[in-house]
Amino acid sequence: MRGLFVTATGTGVGKTVVAASILAALRARGDLALPFKPVVTGTHEPVDRDWPPDDVLLAAAAGVPAQDVTAARFGPPVSPHLAAELAGAPLDPALLRGAFDARAAEADSVIVEGVGGLLVPLTRDYLVRDLAVDFGLPLVVAASPGLGTINHTLLTLESARAAGLRVAGVVMTPWPEQPSAMEQDNRATIAQRGEVDVAALPRLPRADPAQLARAGATLPLDRWLS
Image (tube, rainbow, N blue to C red; front, top):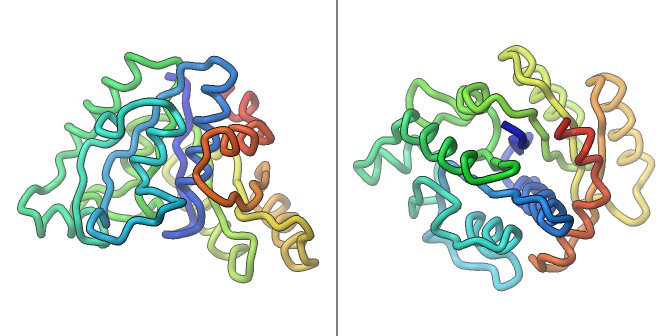
């Protein structure tokens, strides 16, 4: 199966923007790329006019209905294992894998967006990392360019590789027009110490598919997907 699994060094570091940019760029060049977000939490949170919920943003980037993007949605902004327990509907990894397989059967490529970081639990004994292993896709890691990112990113790479995952690349976002000496060194240090391709996405003002596509087209997608 051709595709990418987009994870992150944590919550709120641009994972959805990276996944949506990749999707929009692939769709713009005629690739039937489809999104899959195993679980969405926090649906009870206020909606940002410029940045809709993850599944809605991914759907817009790919031009598909939002209800086709995810296998489960929960209101509280908490870890998926807890959100599912609070709803009385524990997640079944087999059903998540089945939903992914159904997506893959329809697509040229599938862009999966994980939930939080790799070690976030989906159930009490099944992590996002386990799901990434089961899907077997190359990993793309979204990371902040700022202070602390070296440690967070290298730990994520170490965790991924310990499970046998292939890391295609890291994307630092939002990458400033005039990066500081620290930000430039963070990028270079992660590339050197992590032995990984480190790309960057600029700050985007809103979730516009055309802007997402232009940003995604700057990433080395063919190399990552090969």
